Length: 460
Image (cartoon, rainbow, N blue to C red):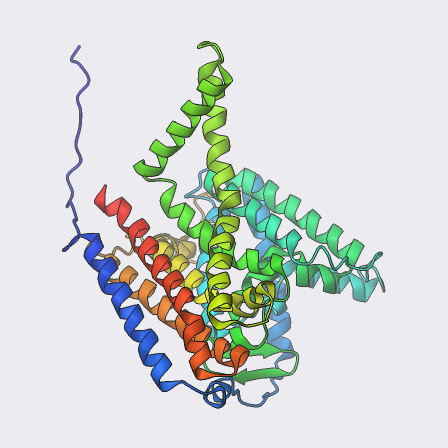
């Protein structure tokens, strides 16, 4: 028998046109120049206030359409769960994996950021609790008042659990359905105990996530109707209400960065070094070491993800402390952190978009095929089985250019929003400009680290 052969695939190797450090220098220089331009042209609180203007509410009367969309939302949740329970356990043949991970968590997020937050109306769990409440009065009115100290921590913990499952859970259609059943039970129990309104405002991670992303949009939806506003200005309507919400926003940033970093050889080498140090410190026998090493390795990976928002928070507060000293303001550091918290959301959004838009383009169109065969039984219910047989592919150089542009634009928007908040907080153009110098350094750091992380798979 011949010996095993080392095979190589045929494909085009892409290298960056210039070293990544040149991209970093160029992007941070453009960011600094944008800061100077913004500081020069927007200098008074009156100019900042004009940027908060929005049009009047325009009532929207479409009860039949809303009811149809709500029924569709509940039906899609049911289909997502059922397809995982009785359908194929092949992730590419089952409807639920693509629908949940790609359509909802990626493409619907981008939809909300552009067209406004429709999730308040289409939340399937809230639709069910409201329907039960109408049939059985006070069924989900709450048994206890919602503790103010809990704030958004339930949503934050559930968000951390979701990202941990995404990165380390190795989910299949069946396990995803079981996770959604468990999450449904958590939602119904939380709504029953604290009331539907309180739970879906503070505890449901998707409600909090899409509400934050919806503030980017030029459209605002509520029971009053719809109104038009400048893009991104919705982030400045009010400050973050609690540290838990600020940590939620920071985790939106840090989890995406971690996702890009943890698959690289650099991070794996660091994880191995930490695991070896722990094994040495424990002084275990070699027979026990392989299993223990694997557990320590996995534990370190998960622990790094969970502490990532706190590392970002420490850096954020350190630079705000410098801002406080430079401006000699009496405003508490905690208050400053909450005032400026929402201005980080554009960075979180462009990080997400730049990391995952290729995945959305590649896997998203498959939903048309899966809609005709949700269980992987080789059906063709709607005649779409042959749609998008070939995936949408983009050249590597185009992907990199788009990523660089998104990262830079997102940071410039955040600098602009921070400047408007600073004008509102300090009520002086000069003090606002001084206060932004440490935060500009933060933006440069985020820009450099974001581009570096995006370049790691290309360089390796």
